[in-house]
Length: 209
Image (tube, rainbow, N blue to C red; front, side):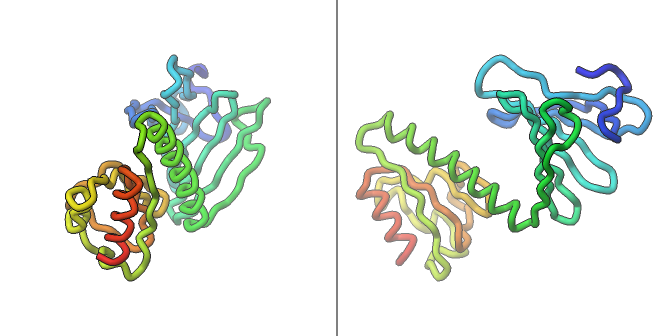
């Protein structure tokens, strides 16, 4: 923890509070000008908790910074224009950027989708190993699907196949446990858990109705 009033780069940070989001613990900070205390993520016991430092940057947007298990600081600056900057901080001076990559909104969404999809695949593999005969499948909802713009409940997937739709990946965002009134959009990735026959039947339903 830095001392009261110490400047980080050219910003001053003040702690506002924190909240937990699953394995993430988000700390909110604010730029306060000439006073305040800088907040740095602290390591918490337990492997499932990652501290994220969130800072409002006046006139720019938001910054999120996390520290990896190996001590590297990685940040995302979200500009009001929609641009994202991926920042890798210097090992020796963790407040100085070693590399900054500017991303368009589409590029940022693509990277987020890759990371979220990989996380779901890892979860699916663990689940399949735990339950014999259970498989998971990611089914792209193609443009022209009869369920583009219709709800999950309209599929009646569980009652018709015995398989369950457990998540949907949409433009880099994972929607876990979608409700029956959830609306599908073209290019959604529908995550299904069930038997091989059941998941194949869900794929057929989403494709042809």
